[in-house]
Image 1 (cartoon, helix red, strand yellow):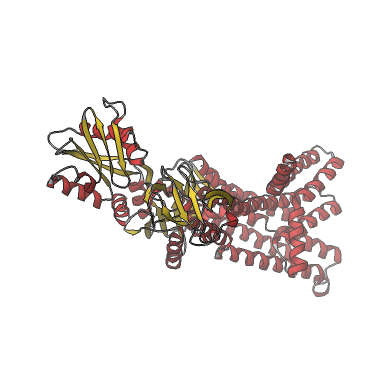
Image 2 (cartoon, rainbow, N blue to C red):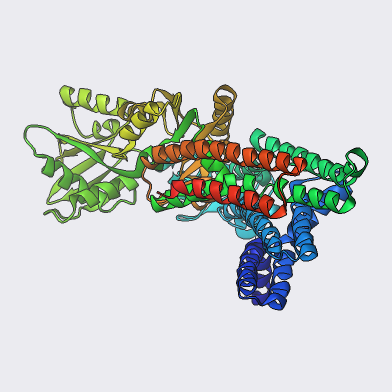
Length: 638
């Protein structure tokens, strides 16, 4: 049963791509057969290319015609292609059948790219749904019982053991633990939670068992709201897409009406014979087909996409390549985007009696028995230095840890905790510690001594700012980006310190996913085209809402990668400026190509109306303009 399901999934997701590839393959074989004079074989292969490549466009065009009473470019393409083939058979000019097949191939490729874009929403939602478990462990009459999430109701008490995902939002009734909330809030460090604190579905429990009370329906959890926000934002059509749709319908109507008039009125108005009239009308359909206009856009965008891919920039569709060049404001997530998302020791300050190595080794001796992320960072920094693990270790949740190492009591924790063992904290060290905390650093105090312990020093822990972040912000400002902001779930002090380090002027801190989404919407009202750069699940709604969503390819979550329009494959922030430059180049080339394509179409239409061109010349002009704008678009490959 598994194989048919996979086959069905493949057919649904890749049918358009397969159709475009087969159409192109049959077109090539048909052209080759015609070139060798094998007319019979060519007349078998080319109609097959028409049917395979044009079926979907014909179906959509006829559906629009009969259900909505509207003409669209899909139907116009089919009429033009069939017209070219009919003329080719009628006059024995079989190369016209090739022209029609090329037109169909271009539209088949466009349909395949559009189909790929439409599949992203479904994959994003599936990735989000996988973040929460299907069942929860509920306390029923004093015993634990696993039930489906869908059966949970307000008031249920849930047990979450160490290392498990929180199944739904709730309030802690008993227990203490650290929760990794990076997926939801973007905080770089796990957050300590105890009785009365709210926890979110999809966050990872640390070392402590928790008993949680469900205070709202599971369907109203934060992660479910994220899912709904992604669905809504991704299905909203941008104004530019609506304009393109209206233009296509208007263009098709004008050409169809003009073609009908040219096929019927000239014998009555100018005395043309019917053969000449039909000939001119079909020639009109060929030269007026949007082949050159399509070539004016897609080769340029595909070339830009290929150029970006070579530089580690993955554009998921051509529209985003254009939009990135129009961006006037950019919002950056902090953790994992402007920073690496990995905490490290920022600074060690020791009192005169001790060295920095003494402070680090003493802290590592007791932290080696701790599961806290900060403790692990300290132990990792101490590495293979000469230190031994402490015994009789006792951790006080949310405060610190104490143990015996080499017959000395070692105390590691916050200032309040250490003061229980030390008579006075050095005033100068207190000032340094306060300064570090104001910069957003986490400060750990280290002391030793069984009675009348003395302070050895402090260790400052911080999330590392990416080395290229400041240069990237400077480059974006030089490119003319009017507003650069930072969005984060971290506290204001930490956010301000990172913003100051990289040169960002406006900061929004302590944000939930929906808050980030609201900021993006406000920026769009002011600046229209807004980019969002992020890496976490909590960034997904904002990435989807932004005009251009940019995700970090290495550190980014699956949901962020699926939701974003552009992915930086090596997490290199400086590539954002490269992407903007490519976008602006593509805009300029597309505008040039459209002017050339429309100029040729107008020239050919006027020549056809005046009777100064025949069908072969019309085809040469039509195909020549297509080749010209295609080659122009390939300039971005350099």
